[in-house]
Amino acid sequence: MKSLVWWLMQSNDERFQQALFYHVAYAGNVSQRKNRKIEFTRGKGLSAEDIKANISSRVLPMDSSNSAITFVQPPLGEKYFL
Image 1 (cartoon, rainbow, N blue to C red):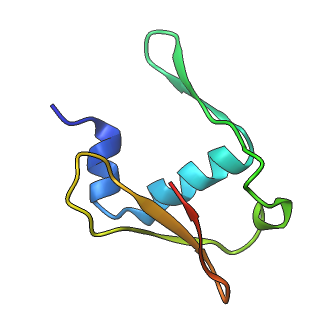
Image 2 (cartoon, one colour):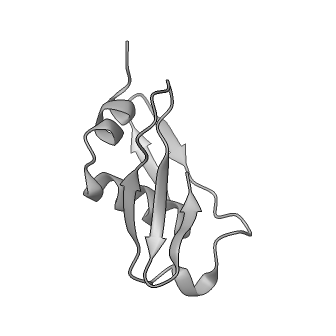
């Protein structure tokens, strides 16, 4: 059975993709049912100036069990991969 996250990523919902980037950038937490949470960690690879930059995203056309998203910063192009 596929997870809700998988279905949202497959739907190319940019709002969901932007929420992922936001939570990684700000090391946020998302509360879940049954006292669980999703924790995001901002690694060293994410440039501080990109946190508030205009970043767009797209789901890569891959046929795999995992989805892949690239985050694009114009005019630099694809900069981050998730």
